[in-house]
Length: 249
Image (cartoon, rainbow, N blue to C red):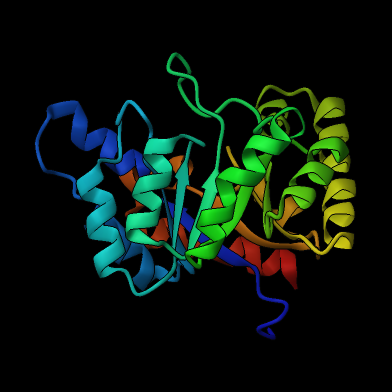
């Protein structure tokens, strides 16, 4: 498989930290998970430092920034605090995501169109620092156009609605969501944006998304951490990699 065609896999290690924090100790170590993910074929590591620090901690980000040999994708809310942390560590990529204190996980994409001016000014210093700026958004033309206008280099399409519809047996809705993701992947690429995708992807749902030629990277975390309980992290990642490559071929 050529390097151009190869689909990258970013492994999100947030929920290794969730398990660690459940006991308030130091195990399992997210940095160890990141190293294992690298060895298993991950092309990058994703970590979301939430405002409430419910899983990933500041120390985790510091350790990842210092020790990774693959790119770090630093997910964060568009706040002054998080901007300062990103500028201090200067990760390979910064992905802006919406955040609500009461949510269990990220619900939907960032509202870019309504905050276009603020976000344009927010990402400017990040780009100047050498970070690739990505915006986590719904598969919506208006949001994609706004992300392009503010100077984002990458968009990550939220695949949660597609995955939820599949899991709940709502197959007509699933297929409609998949078609929307397909169309918006093509549209975003036509604007010159690099297209990533993620949220809720599993072995059962990854291949239709991996088959989109415009998608360059998938970010997957919760499912892989869950599968690691049964298979081990390395084999869980290797199986995801195999399915992605098969879909790409």
